[in-house]
Image 1 (cartoon, one colour):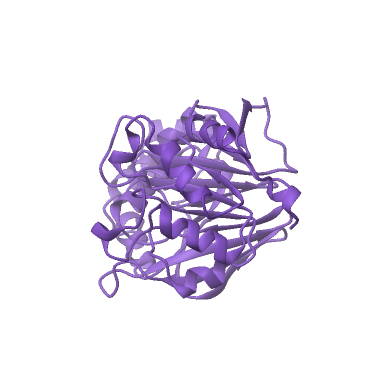
Image 2: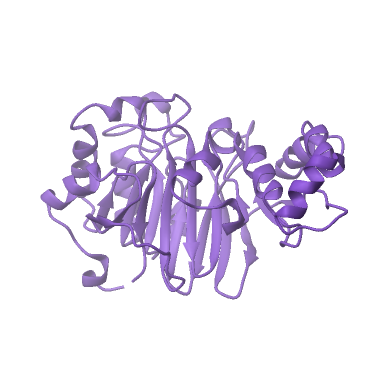
Length: 327
């Protein structure tokens, strides 16, 4: 990737990238424009659904991203209110065929049963199974929620068997007997974990809160470019190796400077700049903002701090903002 493709931006553009939080807006290298009426299948887009942390604020709560590449929708993490935020952006759950969970903290997975059941409830029953990938215990997590012995069995079982639910299903174009939710969950580790005709997903085991909880970062190499989702991890060799040469890196920014209060389990602006500069990524998308970064001027300061030593594009988008990734 050459420097013109990476799109260096000045301080004024950095500020624009920080405050462009209008719902339904498209953010491309620091520029904002109105969302187009229809999503183009030839484009690669990042929909920022959740850009916060476990503590809710007026602007942010939890972590979730929808990667739109060609005709595929890939959900990375499924934090609080992900399904509702998708609806507010005009994105239907049926758009998503794959879910990747970086780890099992609640701010990254708590809305998963809501999303999976909504996707199923609005379906005709002929759609492909929802495929879910993540570190252990992803398979157990899904089974305990949505399996025949799971917490939500009574919900979906009643929707299969009650005459009113059956009639609603038929009005949507479904046929009886109505199938149970079809979900294929898989525990995964480092290496290539999934692929389609247009993308390949690779995982790396990264440092966060092990040994109590395992965490993965994911890289997607697509026909339109490459993107890495770091999750909540700290600066580690595994993340740097995964992100090497990627077009876009999405990673946490919980503070300005180094994350002394959080030891080495997550990143602030200093670590973000170090990782981005060392790996040569073309664009950094900061996320997982702590409540303190919601104060006036703090996001602009965070972007400027990263830009002091990293010379690519730096974005700190609001929730329900779309970042144009196509080259």
